[in-house]
Amino acid sequence: MTNKIKTWLIQDRAFDTGVRLFHAYGNRKSFSSTLNRQGYSPYNHALLIEELRKTAGISAVEIEDILSRPPQTPKKKKSVTKASPPEVSPQVPVDAVGEEVPSLEVVSSEEPEKTEEVPVVELAESLEDKKKDNLSPSKKESKSEKSSPS
Image 1 (cartoon, rainbow, N blue to C red):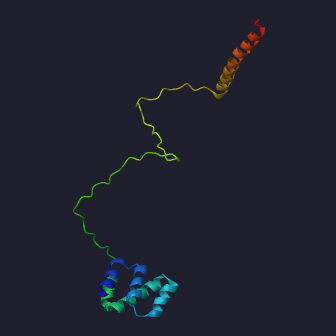
Image 2 (image 1 turned 180 degrees about the horizontal axis):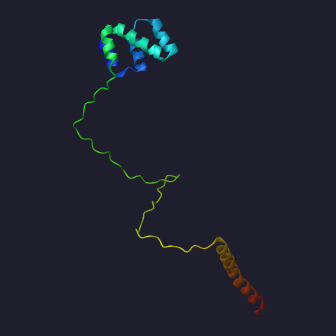
Image 3 (image 1 turned 90 degrees about the vertical axis):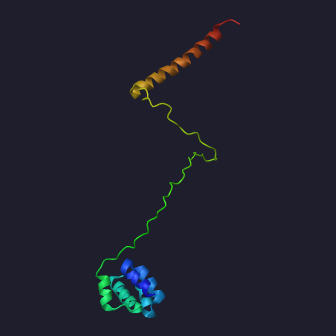
């Protein structure tokens, strides 16, 4: 118990962790309910530290020494073994039915051919001309069928 509280004072000092420690080892139920009701405030945090100090039997001089230093982060043990990178499997796109969708691959690294920019008005006129041309031969055929003797 004393070691856990000292470790919390030296390394962490987070309010939530201190409240859990107080619930586990503290003996003042009224203060425990106050912490639950009011939650964090700088005043409640200072009281929590004082109550945990008394519970762990830490002297006032020792707590002043501990609190005069910033919290220390625990040193992590370095792993000697090298971790291998995770295996990455290629993901195949699937459509809504569950069938594979063919992927698009770049076939050539050449630059695409440049296309001629045509104003929209000219493009629309050329499309209309093509429609007229497509309709006119069929009209000629239908006229020639009517005039030709059977």
